[in-house]
Length: 124
Image (cartoon, rainbow, N blue to C red; front, side, top):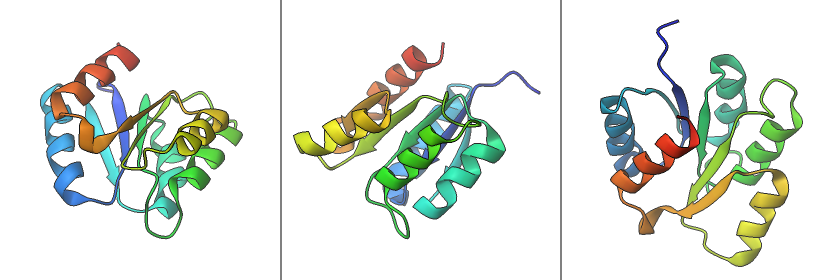
């Protein structure tokens, strides 16, 4: 184990995930990227990340379903999950918090620097 904090990024938009992954790696994090909801839970169970960034609108399986699986499994329920989505309705926020999300951010309103700051606060 190299001591690097691990982040799982479950995001299907390469224009967002690519730059974010590069920026997080530049900060010293080890980043795993999966581009569809179906791969989200297995990737978390296998890699045991310190933090998960989860989009809600994903191919094959939506983020709500992935979050529910993550929080109901013994092996992943303690991993903090931060939602990064363009869904901005209050009912979406409430549903995510009810399912166990740590925080919720509208990704179009966030800079990569702000996401890095959030990451540092979440996993110091």
